[in-house]
Length: 417
Image (cartoon, rainbow, N blue to C red; front, side):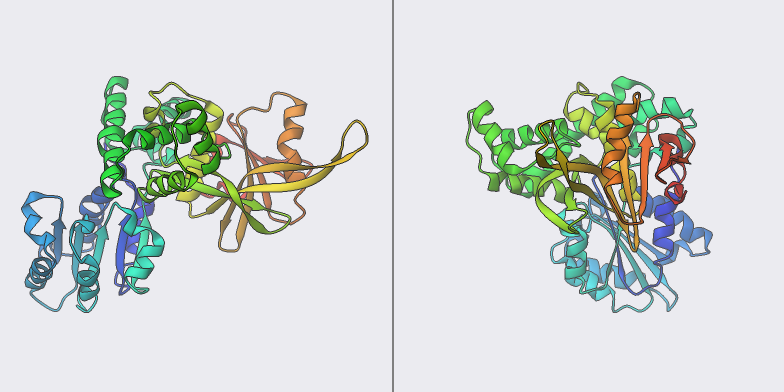
């Protein structure tokens, strides 16, 4: 059972021979190595590239351990280039090599070498790619399987696929697993023995219990405004232990650098400015989030919101949380200010979409509540409400697009309606 990962293959294909280092980033076990060494290599061979012109190095494989030395690696690659035709270097887990930046920059001077690398740590965030390679690094961010990828690969009907996806997420290694017990054990072990240990070791964190507690707090509060001061106060009152907001902020940054979580900033829509507090944090994979909580907190509303957020990132949107301030009169006729929230403000180039995630809208009051914040936005950008049911896209009297989750997730152009 093989996910095709067509979008990511296309991302690599359109970057071929662009004179830059193609850097594939993403959370561990999301399929970076498989993308390069199986799927992209298959593409190259279909294009007529011979095996002798595809140089493969997996630095976490003992066979290539000696190539973790930068001089050895550079020399090895030079020796594999036998003629003036284009060669393709596929280099896995490059962060295991000391001084890898200078080696990769050196490869850029070999005219008939096209370089593709993977990395799993914080040095491969977008800003660092730009810094390290002085504008000659080109990032391709890979995520766990999207819902559509899992749906198409496993051939389930929509509702069965949704139940599986909202419970176990989309890590590729789960595809051949047949029992829930297998999936649960894999995800729980992966989080405990790989992700958390990776963050602890990389950042030399001594207080593992505090990091573990923080991850539980973030996992329990997806879709809720969060800030380090409030979390620190919780530690003080509930855990009876001291932890500064500065430490909490650092730990959250470590989790973001490991691609485990992603923060959505608050954006004042009317004031057109960011509000520097109370971010919302979402997990890169809801299966990992559920595993961290022992599959005990299965809130469908928040999980659906997390999945919509991830889908927007996969489609290339920068995603914020919107705030709209209004004046309302209470029963005594006194005017008060009130903050209304828009779940997502999604920006991609000149495109912007305001999105509300509404698991159910059973009453007229609930309809009014979901539309109220959108009605306060006076610009002409599209406004969308996504519901859990299989409603076909339609427009209401305000011009808002109402669509079911199925249409949103299965059509990559669903927001063009």
